[in-house]
Length: 430
Image (cartoon, rainbow, N blue to C red; front, top):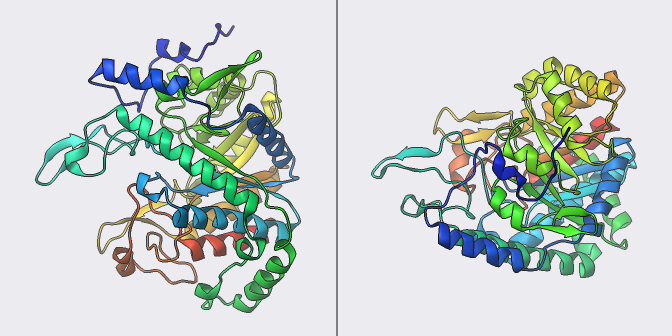
């Protein structure tokens, strides 16, 4: 029997991956201020997303979710935000044009400022052992700026609010001829270039006069003192009003842990990352905690195995979920299980072809099991010149990684690689 829930009941459970504050008085003042600031999103928006996710779970829509691994405060500017929003919109347009399924666009944006780390500290040459970088709402990336600072939570709120303000106005008034103009010039090396070119022209003609689809916000809810003060009571429910959707990471999904305790009480749709270490019975227990009322669209299972482990792991997880009778939305995170280190320069990277492979394998397994892959979860940027992931028709090599490697954490697909991925996924689903 579940105990009574409240936004702070997670504090009685063991929690991982959260920053603790040396100056508790300063932290309490910041959290009090955040609790008094207006919500970033509305409950009705979260409910609307939940209904859309339910449709994706039934195979009627398809989720395109993605964005930065960890947002940077400096990227909160018009040019970068416009490119990011346009990219996720265009990926949705591609999917709808090819498959006929309307997209559900969810960005890793307006709050994806925190990151889990394998270790709390790291050794940096010239500085010794220092705190690991945990995202800009916790500490700075520069070795001299690694102290955990609660004031950064407020900076995260202001940057999230500015991002959302821009997104809402852009989506309302954006010129459809601009947002639907897909640039495929970087894909000329593709053997399918002429077909892609025709599809891009058709998409522009089809979508240029349409009203824009909504783009929802999401982030990994890791720093629970922050999430607690952004959680507000609405009638007889509690919503996290810092984002439309939040998810639990693969490192913080312990059944008896603080994060699962927090997530079980909010009315938002929620995601949970599921990797190779997830046991079938553990997944069943987790679903019973997070969705005891068997509500459609409530829980999204975000599988992140790596291309080589999909066929080994996914069938068992699907059958375990089926046995519970709890409806879920299945999503493929095709990036986090496919990380590699470039041999020539030791840069963290991913191969685009491995990302495609994991998604295609997930589609195949779901078809065999009689379930639907409801969407994909990627890390990408709307910047054309970023060089962080290998391969694709742009032919990005290890030697090219150093040209414009911007990310503060994990590598992202650039604009051309993301657009090509959308075409590949849509064709596979179709």
